[in-house]
Image 1 (cartoon, rainbow, N blue to C red):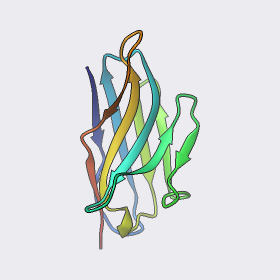
Image 2: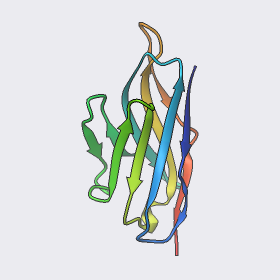
Image 3: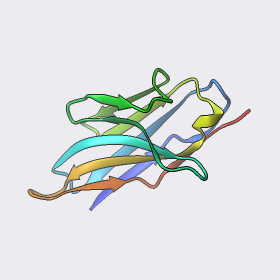
Image 4: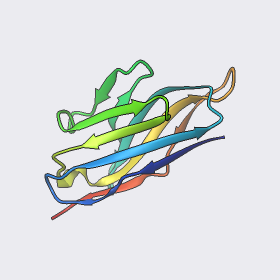
Length: 120
């Protein structure tokens, strides 16, 4: 079994910052790509940012220049630093990781989600 535990969400004023974390634990042979997605009420889930095992990053257009994705391989933890937050960033943020959990098996695992609310 593989578990993802997210933390760091909350309520922040426009222009503020938050840092999300996603700790991955369990039966892990190798972690491949990791990423953050978000889903606002009534909207589809969308990519925020992802990072490959080699460290290459990719961002959704709406967050480029404001958000930074990173990871700590020793801690199997993914981070999302969110700056200059806007009300449109309000959503539930989910961590997604592709994990090799046996010699021959890979799977995507989702976190439980953490709420980010940007409001004055």
